[in-house]
Length: 293
Image 1: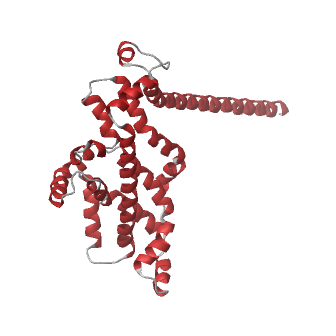
Image 2: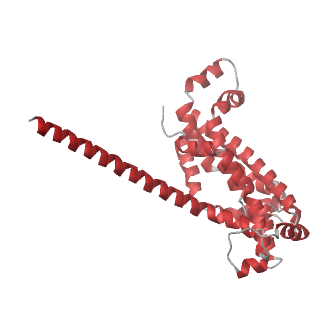
Image 3: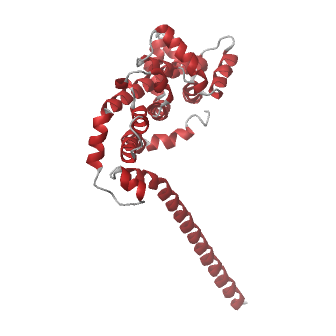
């Protein structure tokens, strides 16, 4: 009887050890898969940086993972053809202004939908959501005619003002507002004599900080990468943002791969920095407004 009990204990220990080995092997396979996936994601960016240091002949004739010696030559050649830093400043101004305007107007609109009861609110909100299904390119002709009538073509306002009409921002902030801001807080502010704009700016807006910070990252990146709208609405070379100027390197001055890779590297540098600095907000934004209190 004692022997059978000892044998059962030994078998349990062996099974537990085997289970730990299987779990360890499974974790190793998962880590190896994630490492391989990370390498696949990093390789294109690495090659972009490497090829920006080679000239056009070496890029077209060979495949290499080693840096070259033509980075300064490529930069001097690019600077002689386009003002890349002017485009950088244009992109930063347009993306920054569009982000601020889009977030504030979106939050203000969401405040109206979330905290005010008025006739037709549900239908109007559904119509707003329906506009998210329409590609922005379809409205480009109407936007062009509108700003042509207003005399705002070839101006920064033609790119910045339409950013205020962002249906996704309204939807995102409204969901967060309904789950995170009790009506009692707003009612207390009204009882104390604060008007609606003061209530929104001093009470509601600070509470929306997590949602706005996460949403602002995506809005800034989307505006920074905007290519078609500036290409259609701008005519002056000194107003073009960075993505359009990089395309000019490829289109107007022939296919110089060294210049093209260098221009792309400069254009995506702010996006990489934004993602690296605010990665926690990007990941955390997935759960914002998901649970309603």
